[in-house]
Image 1 (cartoon, rainbow, N blue to C red):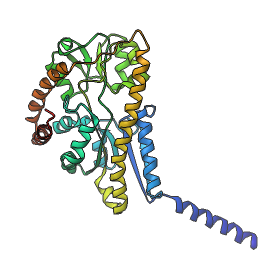
Image 2 (image 1 turned 135 degrees about the vertical axis):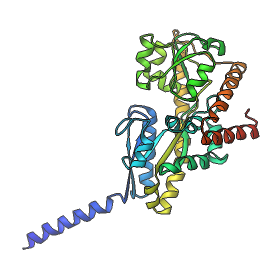
Image 3 (image 1 turned 45 degrees about the horizontal axis):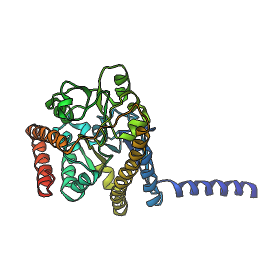
Image 4 (image 1 turned 180 degrees about the vertical axis):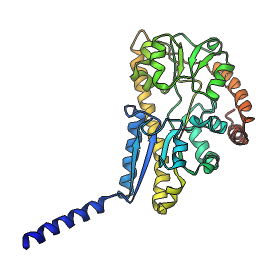
Length: 337
């Protein structure tokens, strides 16, 4: 009898122990980065911090790119309840509304991560994203970015004139349009195919990602004329979740999530900047790699070409017009144009 009571007591204690540590809320969030990238590793650190800050009440199950749906389909997957959230580049949804492409990567607009984050957090960007995502049943939690991307090239590219006829990889939407307007010949390839396409001569250059990631992947070994800092791309990365699941969270967890994303943005941009500085020194030690840095005059030429494309894209939807007016208004007021 005593033995049976002991077994029952032990079993009940185990159940209580498990339930005490089980999360009250679980969010399944898909990233747009592969698990091996530094980006994903920093994102996982953020997810772990959120769980610790909420005392284990909120668990974020972070999934690498393509785990459940394609990187361009996460917005719809949240709306359908297949995913609970996304940590992704906003520009991937330009096919659903050009506004996402315009705000997701206003090519040539930002020369520093602080400029973009200041616009988002204090210049109206967050409010605009909240409005854009509302029809999809998605709650915009906060903005992040990576860094001003490097430009990968097998041939020297020292200014706008060198882009003419250049066969390069660029994501669809505004980025492709700007490069085409500059005289380049952009092609749409997924990131996973960039290395192979460069090595086989399918393309001669690529808009890909930050310098440290390119260096680690061996991009600079086959495309030995990188442009650093890049002159073109600073993508908006957003953390967004299901509005329905957000509404179920207690207010204190909502506040923790909001503040945690601001901290995450500072964390990832700082870590990637440090990694880039280290990778640049590593590349400079290789006599076969030549790093190119565009002059202020050439950067200004590229931005003027980009501005024309911003305006054209603003005519493609009412939301795109809102983005154009918001971003250009902010740039003008802050003397960034």
